[in-house]
Image 1 (cartoon, rainbow, N blue to C red):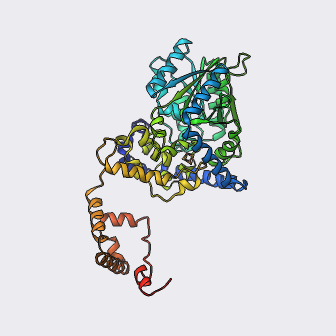
Image 2 (cartoon, rainbow, N blue to C red; image 1 turned 180 degrees about the horizontal axis):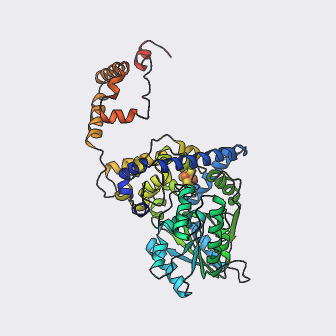
Image 3 (tube, protein in one colour; image 1 turned 90 degrees about the horizontal axis):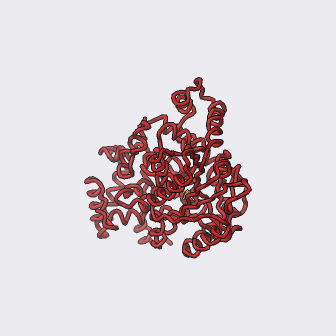
Amino acid sequence: MILPHLVSHLRPETFPANARQALADPVLTGALRRATDLFAERRGGAIAAVPDWEELRTRAAAIKAATLSRLDHYLEQFVARSEAVGTIVHWARDGAEACAIVRTIALQHDAKRLVKSKSMATEEIELNAALAQDGAEPVETDLGEWIIQLAGETPSHIIVPAIHKTKEAIGELFVAKLGIAPSSEPAVLAAHARQRLRAHFAAADLGISGVNFGVAETGTILILENEGNARMTTTLPKVHVAVMGIEKVIPRFADLEVFLKLLPRSGTGQHLTTYQSLLTGPDPAGQGPRELHIVLLDNGRSRIVGDELMRETLACIRCGACLNACPVYQSIGGHAYGSVYPGPIGAILTPQLAGLHAGGTLPFASSLCGACKDVCPVKIDIPSLLLELRRRAVLGEQGQPPTRGGFGERMAWRVWAWFTRGPRRFRFAMWMARVGEKVPFLQKLAGPVRAWHSSRELPKLAKRSFRSTWRGGAS
Ligand code: SF4
């Protein structure tokens, strides 16, 4: 079992060892399988009721591509409209700058009691740890985030942070941390959480959130959620700070219609999230925050925008569908990736945000089955991006040493290259493969081959080769 104090120290550089450790944990793999199967099933039901689903995906992909190709223009428009309605906008080149901005805002307001709704951007910059230096660590108010904060862990899924935990494990955690009577009943546990969190909301000086979409046309930010915690985080404290990745901007208010149909259905299989909080500037009347700050976070994103081959990565709307569909994620969960962004999106985003030296092994954590591309609501071609990152890692681009496979893998590729360099050699290799196919025990001799065979079937060779068919004049 992965221990809490180890979970937060896993790094992407040690992905292969992290993955082996996760695979050895039957409780983890069981919890993951049940949860991801359930989300995939709900997603299937939700999208079946939308006849123009594919058209919506195409429209969303086109909106994102057009926005990313003129991101500077839309960001300038977003800032101008936000400031026009009274929002205070800050630019942060990296995580350290973003944390410093939020710390300064908290210090200016002498805010010690902070509440925060779920936000991957703030996880990415490790905002909680930065604020803790001033004695003002925020209380996470999303139930899943609160559970992992109590456990001292990091999220293991983009939209379901505690997906790796069973209700029994959460019950034990509440007994240990909150002193409640033993229970693993979800309704009982949720009631305890609600009672504790309400007190934090009532006392909070400052609220922090992420942003799902920022509308350039109006300066509006949208936050989606199901528990009402983001609504309370943005309305009860007098000051609110929203941390927004620069790729979250969309041109028009009407574009939200497309994304609101896609995101909840793809993520949790809901037709719509229970709450949609739209904030257009502060609200002196007190229905919203009296003071609203938006921190626009770059942290490597403008570099990705400038990389035409990889720019598509930033179209992601963080729905989590690719995680639920990925056989690798389903088997090892999110912590093994050693980064805030796990699964297929993490395998392409982390190496670009953190550099290939840190995340260079992650693009290899895929069977390239294409399930992620099939479910992605904005049609990101994740397998192609994985292949491009693999190419860069192997060639050692960006000044990093080349990623090399083990001795056995390198030899296997050399042998394969030798056999494919001439027609005679290739024919001989095919003859050997046909002989091998008739002698099954040969396939199971060596250790790596045996391991490969333990969970896969070798595809059968065609009865007649293409060459012999061609010679025979078949069409
Ligand atoms: S890559 Fe696509 S499927 Fe995966 S989280 Fe992003 S939007 Fe969702």
